[in-house]
Length: 196
Image (cartoon, rainbow, N blue to C red):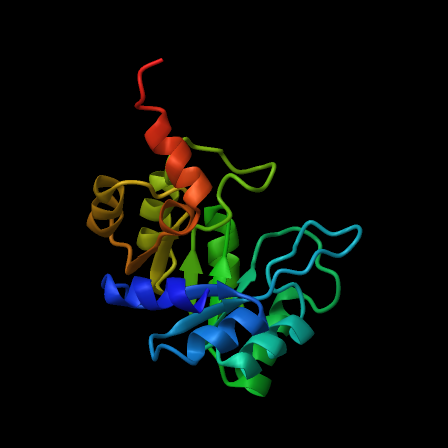
């Protein structure tokens, strides 16, 4: 992961989103780019797994994350409420909060609770949000118009045109994941162009 982060930096990335204390620590050792830290933890009976509680947030903060990203959807949480978690990240860790949402209302609520950034990460990953083939441009547009904090476009970005469109809609940044980090999916995409 450190090598991939360094390659992303060399390619012009302005930040890295990374999962888990181990990867974040390794990435911090090779780059001074801002790290958006997440800590995926699956807990029985809960769908929320992106930094679901304060213990998960604390681990990635101590590993070197500059910003803590978390699931800010309306789904049930395993421990602290969303308001409590955002508050603890601010007061106990001194870190800004990057709220992953799946719809406009979740973005509005997250901002009311103190989130510093709103990201479209979970659009299409909740049963009540649309699963679009590409990025959810409608949600980007709505969030930019209504939330009053930087909107980060994330989710199913594959082309330069999609990235440009997100910025045209007012996104402050775009997170690109699978399209640059997953060799299997990158290969599958190119194989689709091979004649049968």
